[in-house]
Image 1: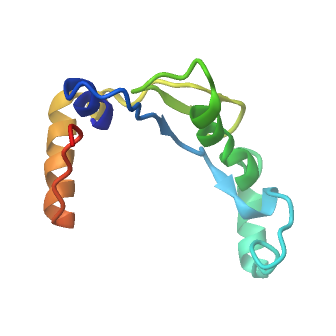
Image 2: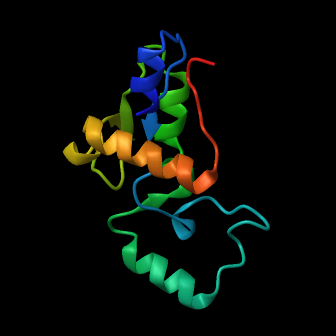
Length: 122
């Protein structure tokens, strides 16, 4: 929706989307003070999901790709190749969320919830 509004306003700013997939602490490299103090229960739960997940470090890859890929264009959506894990690739959003009507309503609700009106032309 932001990209649609930016384009309509004649802005050269681009807005891209990215999602991390299923990223969990126990599969990420140890980072002192961040993911090194997980409870035993959390570690066991994360391990039970590990066959379909990836570490949070890899979960950041789609965001990084969207930010630095010279071929990325406004309105594109990046996520893991296998939906929940994998190399960052261009993915299709859920059709309903890509609909203009959905974007208009989401924008209206966001402005109402925050009390902030955002004008992409400004």
